[in-house]
Length: 309
Image (cartoon, rainbow, N blue to C red; front, side):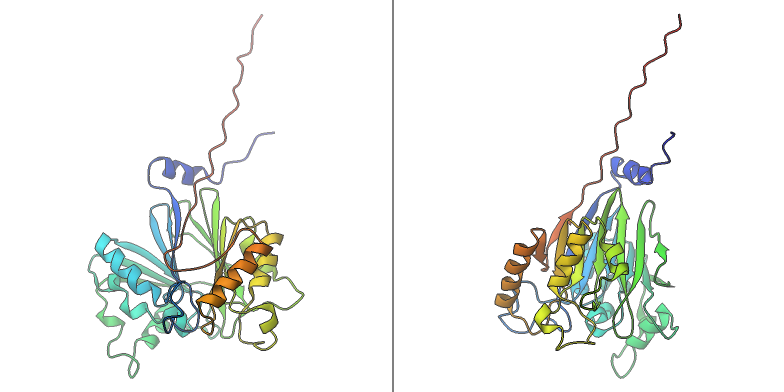
């Protein structure tokens, strides 16, 4: 039987040429509000923002307050090509967007993509609505970078660069939300926030994003004991994250979108419980990094020359 084409061949060849690589960096892991006070600093104070450096490209997931520091570093590095993906447009996921320095750098291209809207609005319309009076004194017309707005539908597979696949799925959240799975070089990282699970039921769409992933960021705003109290708020629990990670053979589970009510001691206690239940669990924090090495290309079997007698 002849083997089919290797789906990762292009990504592997890019990695071998020094263009590849897959690194994930956390710039903000809190939900609802930035950390407030001295007892909410150990895990970082910023709201949702995760960067994936994939195949020489810079992908950003959500634009919470964490994107502000990221933008400053990108400007200093003179990064000229950036892709931003929104899970949804609640404030904690977009509040840093107007302060993203690369927007104000001529010669920079920034792609802004979203697919969660339930009312048919487009990506550019959402950004313009965010940056308007009386909420801000300036609008997106002040941007000096080349901005490309893209609106997709959950379930679409996006291709921001050669060998990079960004799979998307609808999440269970008020006003809509989208989960993402980035595949490159035989590795996968998923960003799955904000979503509310139904007790006793496995969300098949979420499970597919988790499947065999090297690292998954999952909405763990609540504990299982708190779920009934916050039913309908659109968030999940760390216990559900552990169940999904085990069922999907996920290697690392990053607890994400921390409740604004939790202090550092509470998050540390949750981390201990989660690790006891699943060794690959860890509480997300600003500055956390994951380096995902490309899957080695399988060795080709040697073929003996036929002997002719």
